[in-house]
Length: 443
Image (cartoon, rainbow, N blue to C red; front, top):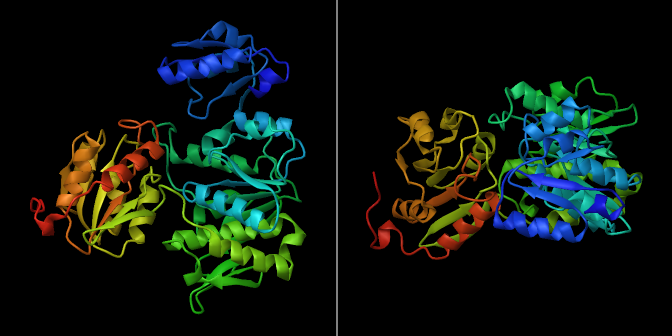
């Protein structure tokens, strides 16, 4: 819509044809956009002056391949937004896990300093939408996926943050190194004045950032760094300033301590005014008031002595490992969805507290094969209500049920949010557990 409203002739197409897409096409038509559903006019695309790709479309897709063969530039929606917002001040965050929470934290902290700040990009609000609103916000915390980085040649943040990296999206990338290469594009326009926040505890991140020009600052959960967690005093520090005690951060898991360190450090580096004693106190208060996001290790209920946790956002093995490390109760783990190319055997070292795995969806046979002998596994079929019922039947008071799928949601749901909402709705109807008169746990 932004391109159409600024006088450009726009053609939009999608290979699918659904009711939701027809609604979108009708809205675009009102803006003067010509649309096509159920296919693409490749000759027309090859004659375009610019192609804007949805991040979910792989570079090998026929419309993008046709554009590149014809020498047409292919860019992301973020790139369009940046071109229309040339003076935008923004912190860009990428990584395999934690980037959404870190982005939301950064926006929250910028707001705590009195700025009009927005979280945008992969977190949900399109940057182009902000460009249509007239006056831009003071600051944007911009979450960038590997797909978006691939097609955003103009990325040049005030501060860039690299939270961590591990193999992901191997259903799209030929190798982990190819995926890492797209993540590394965060640094594509680095200069000596650029500012980077990197995870000192992640050797791959450190390697990818090692030769990048600019000012490098790091965060760590164990070693003293520009931002770090002092285990002895249980305090978070940034740029030599004590921020808050660990028990004042209302988030589960050490990974969220790392996210808080990364966000606070990035915001402090973004402007010298963010490093005054008054500003540091405001940042500390911002960390105290930040709450966990939906679908990210979100405790949704305590029923019959059983804790139910929604971590639907964990769509890869590495993020499920993070969730498992934070579990303190005997756990029934719900794994499944659409396979993304990673072996589930990597979960085995962190299954110490897992009493049973319910494997479901398209990936269920692979999960069962990979975890056989390491933990009790049962397959829960393709009906999500059956999955939750099986989990309930396997619990005793004092247990936890963790939805942390390590898979995408696309076999059963439109996205991870829909999966998380379905889980929460089913949990709200959960009856008594196995110890209270239901069927005995499956052993």
